Length: 145
Image (cartoon, rainbow, N blue to C red; front, side, top):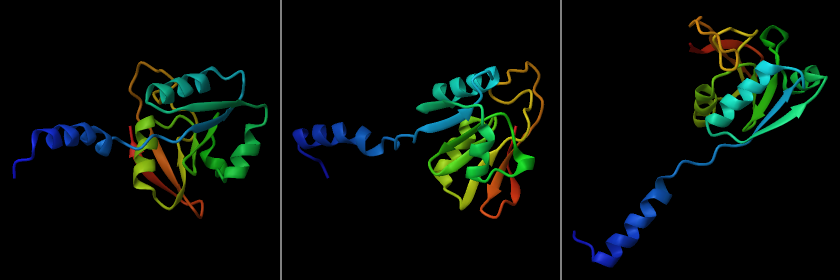
């Protein structure tokens, strides 16, 4: 069916709006004011399209406890995004996948501080895992990098 020219132009103007991705929710990051790698992870998230609100604190553990981060999953900073926790140097692509898939879980973690994770900047490609933390605290591998 051929549409009148004006209708076709109007619909072509709407197409980008209709298919535009939903905006990413803000990321609240709780970190020590002295931690440089945390700042680099914040930059990684911003470069990936997230609006990041940084909360410098000398008591990051308070936020880990509040969000239910298992002790074994700990890292240097903790974040909240879209109702999920994000512990440590989780790649932005995995956070975006989490937000798209919306699993029934607490969130994601990269335990410790793997040298090749975002913000750590190792020139070597050292493998590490991103872990999904379930509602019960049980963990499963979410991604391998």
